[in-house]
Length: 364
Ligand SMILES: Cc1ncc(COP(=O)(O)O)c(C=O)c1O
Image 1 (tube, helix red, strand yellow):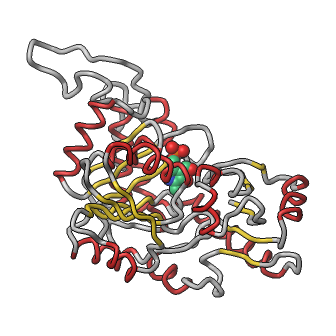
Image 2 (cartoon, rainbow, N blue to C red):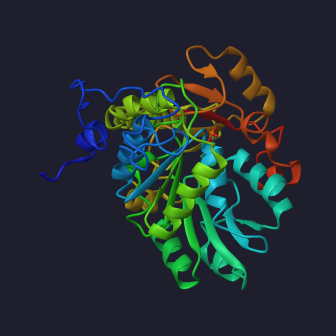
């Protein structure tokens, strides 16, 4: 096979024309089981929770895009993250980025803490602080970069080196950048998670998640958990994401182009007090953004100076839809403090600067 580029892999990796008909598109294998040619023999497929050709194609496709040998798809981004956490045992400690997606915070604090895992939330852009927080029972460094909604970055290469020094599993939620703009495994991370609901599917019509891994021992555990707990991505959703990924490169380019233009426009507006976008030279981590991402994406947040002004804008905005989520072809706008980040306790949110009265608006 010749060496192929990202866009070619996005269209072809994991997908061969259907051997029966030659169908160029991966069929939706809507089946719960597979007929076995003889006792003790299968064609590689036995039961559809365990393995499904449409899901398998997507798993191979996403693994190829992240440059990894293993990939698994789940019923949602949260199911994917929950599966990754089964690599840990009661008594283990995790260091995690302080302003992760609110649902991740909720899973860790309000579900997994009850099963004996311990979490320290910290600003992972400060790796000295991360190093100081490592304990004898620390097993994982869980990073989201850039974070939503303040768009703070963590230096992935340095974070991976730190994780390696302390024997931690380095997990990166790469949902916001997608493998098109950021490849955490190439920078040293061990595991990447995605909410495929966002940019990978890209059309706001499916909920799903994936876990992409570099190490066989981790992959074997995730395969076992995927089958044992059964939170699999359906064949139809797998097909939707496969189809969405085919245009990932084109969509990400356009998100980036629009993001740069809108951020630059927002900066020029006298009523806008502050704009957060890694592509702006004024972003405190602009140099890091250029180093570890090949684009800045389409997610921007800004402040108007008061909650009343933010509410007024959100009540009157046209074209942008007031909705949670991101990564679709349409433009969404939201108020994180009362919407996406509502699952953070008030004190935690205040520490992040996302109070209910806060005027931060997030556009994507
Ligand atoms: C960064 C990030 N990770 C994970 C998730 C969870 O994904 P899902 O909604 O598919 O469960 C989200 C959802 O918004 C997200 O933004």
